Length: 368
Image (cartoon, rainbow, N blue to C red; front, side, top):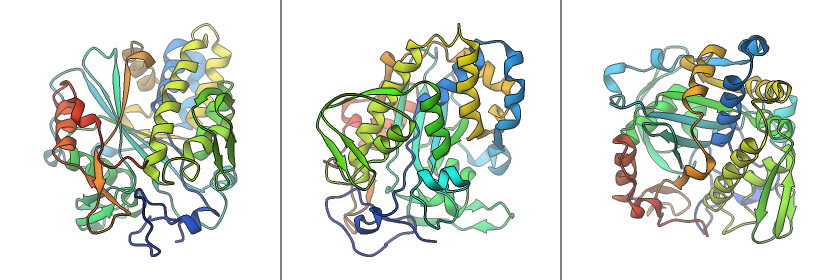
């Protein structure tokens, strides 16, 4: 399996130190990185919950389900929140399956898929606000023992790259890894791929972003002057994938762009009359569901509709985006590790529906 490697740190290691690692030399030819945001989820859910049910019956077949609860041992999981709050694990897959995904991913012979973006989205009790915590894909974690699809066991391993867990064991193991590292119970799982991201942005007519400094990234093909830009699906994908044109060229630097895009996408959704336009709502929902994989609890139109209604109060203005506090690894500066006690304080606040300390919102490693 061949993948390019990028680094969160200011220095580069010429060798691939982990499965899923990346280097700038290879990165120019084949970029990784669908950057999924909560907007993908909310577009789908708002569309499903706000229009006539009969228009969505044929969408059931689009949704792919993964039985996370069956794959995990209940007694080995964190307890559910004692409130009506919800925690979602949202993944962006860099799968090259299918011609469109392969083209958008830069082509090349790439086997399998990786969780190129991971966000733990916490919706506190009352469901009128939300916080999205981005987990850098180069974070070194302890992968717990997990079961593969064929029933065999993958033993626990330390210091593995977070984004390698998906390709090595699958989505259920990613959920288990997040639960182990955070103590946060994951209620739902959602995943979307390259083509789904592009088609979703095109379905809503593009997203407007404000560029503070020029971005010129030959690797991703993105060339934007400072100012306001309305991006189509292909441009949006390049925008959230770019890393060579910002900061120190690392994965950490572009997380800020992903979070900015998230709020811009949500704002665009709110500005459209989805509830009054069944045709538009259907087009958006159809685009999203074709490339969507969820846990079994959301893998039906009825479940999505019910969940949508419970989230109608979430507004972009009340949403907060945070990167998991990380620091550069002392053994390998091209990798990062959770920065304690900041990371622990962040996860505790989410577990308890508490206020996130300001110190837990700041990361020692920023990516420039």
